[in-house]
Length: 337
Image: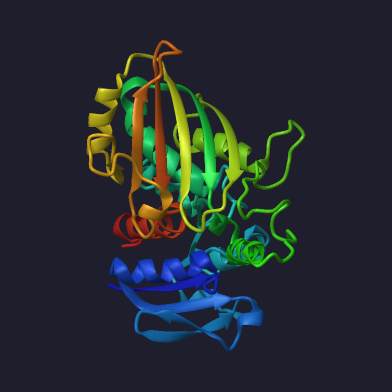
């Protein structure tokens, strides 16, 4: 049996990656629709060896599809997702708008696939924040053994997480610097080329950014409401791939060697540490990969039961497109028969 699928935001970074992922994983399709804003109407987007037309979101009839994979931005999702859900399609939304809605499951398939069963409340399933996804994939198998009390995480997030315009800004600023031309920030608050910016999303009343709040709130909803999370989120001049420096405090002992064995067996995780030829992974080495990669795994001697590690993933794949397609795969396997 095949399914009729619409990819909303198909002209963007994540939308194109979703289309590629559907093909790579041989998702059972009867029809595929690439949907975008009115300004993209008349253009096409690649789907394998053929080009498919971009259809106007404002005019699209969602009653003709079964599943919508959306990455069109929070404001756009807020408007169209309920319309699509009312028309009978199940919406898997990559934006932040529905993530904390108590009637919308927030899902990482390796962590809480059972939550997908609640999709019928609104016909919407939310994809978590890209950095949250890779962190909870790494934390879940450890939490099952030793119960996590607290996580302190610093993120090093690539510009692709802010969209194509952000990638263009890094490229253009880098070129301009080498050509002794001026650099004017537009997408980011400060120069991103040869720099790091400790701000992702807006600042909140408690002086944290909304991105930092998302990581804490989403981890609680997905994994365990008792886990405390302190995050510092930083944008770095990398095109693709998010990195995290993670420090975890447990309720009981979990030595690094035991944690390594647990993570080596965990679904969706690859451990590449000092024993390997690579020693550790960096974002450029894992572009296009599906797994969450763990390196620098070591005991933290400053707390009774502590562990530190380095965590890297392709934010356009596991952090967005792949996670959404994996949700769709479980949805059709277990719920849309």
